[in-house]
Image (tube, rainbow, N blue to C red; front, top):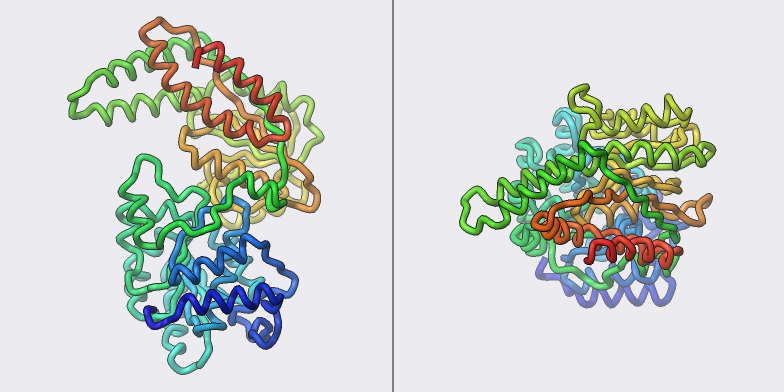
Amino acid sequence: MDYLDWHNLAVLYRYKYLNNRLKEKSFGYQSSNLGIPCFPRNLNLRKYQHQAVANWLDNQGRGTLKMATGSGKTIIALAIATELYQQIGLQVLLIVCPYRHLVNQWSRECQKFSLQPILAMNRADNWQGELSTQLYNLNTQPRSFITIITTNSTLMSQGFQSQLKYFPAKTLIVGDEAHNLGSSRLESSLPRKIGLRLALSATPERQYDEMGTEALINYFGAIIKPEFTLKDAIAQGALVRYLYYPLFVELTAGEALIYAKLTKQIGWVLSKNNSFDRHDNLTSLLAKRSRLVASAANKLNSLKELMLSRLDSTHTIFYCGDGYLDRDRNVRQIDGVTRLLGQELGYRVNSYTTDTPTEIRENLRRQFESGELQGLVAIRCLDEGIDIPAIKTAIILASTSNPRQFIQRRGRILRPHPDKKRATLYDMIVIPPNLDRETWQVERNLLRKELIRFLTFAELADNASEATNKLLQLQKQYRL
């Protein structure tokens, strides 16, 4: 798209925005043709969203939006597509998502812009014929438009890759939760022929993968202004305020013994400077210890104590780990939590996992939003992208050390909703057992990283002073 004067496109957009003419007929934002991008009458972009559109245009049609979860990146992407249709006759919008439920969510948002997307996932014979036909018709139907929403896995498939050569030059690719696209296999599947590129992510940097991050930025383009933090989003009302309550949990005697053994082994591996298999051993030991902490048995006792005073509450998410409360009996934490809440306490809940079929997930979402279900018990599939603004409370029984997960979760919970003035987060934190002096030094280094996560949650909360003081007691106790 080198022939375009991108600066003039950005100037025209800013002119329309400043003169409040984004929705006037003279700019083509009213259309009765389904499938053609049309700006919704009842939608008003925030100032930072307008800035993002203009800056992406100024960046020659490429860039990465690094904005807090819930700040409206989806709307910005669709506004960009609408603007490109009006100014240059954009022909195709290709949206790539990591999960199937996000394809359905994007479809709902696209329909607000009068788009009729092809949902390219599951079996190719459900969508490939329609896509081929619509791509062919682009040459015979002036000002026609195609929207395709697909998953990362479908993008890599031979069936989808074979269609990419027929996409016209005026195609925009949008990578949702784009950090996932930095893996070598996915990045190599991204179409080089498509020049208009937009990446969306609250956390585009890939943890422990500088090469993947660099490849992602090289493909989609640099992070463009404005970066919109969670603090910005709360201050401008894009996200609601929240309360944060850390809940300290002790390991059982048996768990403490295993914990101490694993920590000692981690210290031993860290001391081996020239071992070929050092990294693999360390990763395995850290994963075992992380699963032990995530599935600590006393978390259920803490949850029961908390929920006894909240049995009338609704719109609560329970985040579990993928570990086992009792491996011998094959009892996973998510099953134990669901049984405790549903059978023992009579709290109306259902599990929500990657194994839950898409149609059932959608039904659960509706039941949760209406209050028919008081809560959802999830592992990871509510971390990225899913939009359930009705969530009022989250109880985090397990988290990884990856900052992306807690950033995503917090933003997910803070999405605004007419019935929600403020959200509440409960975070279960396992207290390390007493360790010998040698092992303790290893533990302090590991715990220090965890404390950063807790303090990040606490510092923006309405009860920041209370939550931070509680965490500082932990810091003082362990001399961090």
